[in-house]
Image (cartoon, rainbow, N blue to C red; front, side, top):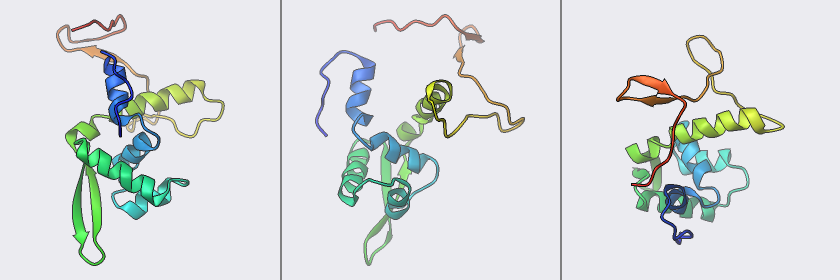
Length: 140
């Protein structure tokens, strides 16, 4: 994929990696346990085989996914997220929470497994050892 944003911004540079059509959805399918090409393709109705193949190769080249050959004839691969890919789970959770609050038709909610109630997104400062709501993005 080509770099689309030449901006000194974390959001823009992250979108250069994961902002192409289908890319986040492919990552999400691997995150929830679909690990083969056919499983991912079946879950993503509408994605072509070529597009899925391109996205998986791109994600592998970008260090978000690793593949392992599990069948020689025909060659078939299993896909796993790297630590970098797994770190996107918080992004998916934030999108789920946003959708729960703003979509007209919502399909999922994020719950606390222990009690079954919906959760909220919070920010934590490890220095102060407390949840905070006064956050600010600053240049580095």
